[in-house]
Length: 216
Image 1: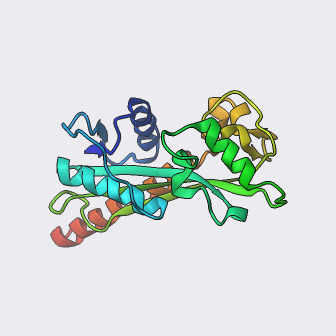
Image 2: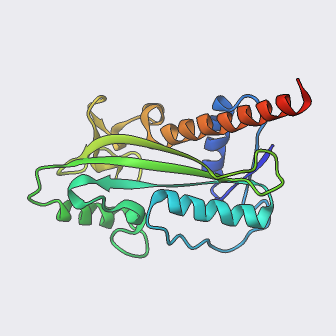
């Protein structure tokens, strides 16, 4: 089954190909990018939640390509800040996106606040055009990784808010973890797993319909 990923990031596509192949085993999956299907330009992400933005991107990709399409949206939510930076995580300090400025703004907004609890969130949405196999309502999966925000950055790896995001079970920030450690507990990995479970359920439901229709 060919699936369009609403992204031009080859690294993300390779990562998703690996993860999805591990979790979805009943059908063979081939991922293609927006660039591969001839899509140019940007998709306006004006949703108020990660799910809304993921769906906006997945619907745009599906409409353009005619293929089953997947998109993700992710970011950081901080409880004491009412869920900020949320969907604005990448541009929290304004345009152009700047990780250092975003981290500075986050620390400033948390000055004097004792509750530093936070979570990284990743929502993956899949839209399948009508008439395609497995078509129906969008398929959604969301993953979380709970942690807390430190008072000062630690570590030189990762990106975004990783130097400030402390994961207590490992005793490290995301920026201090190896790629293997981070992938094992990350919100993206959890989101892919949740999505794959929902996708596999859709496959099982379609098989059951065929069995009943043809008396198998």
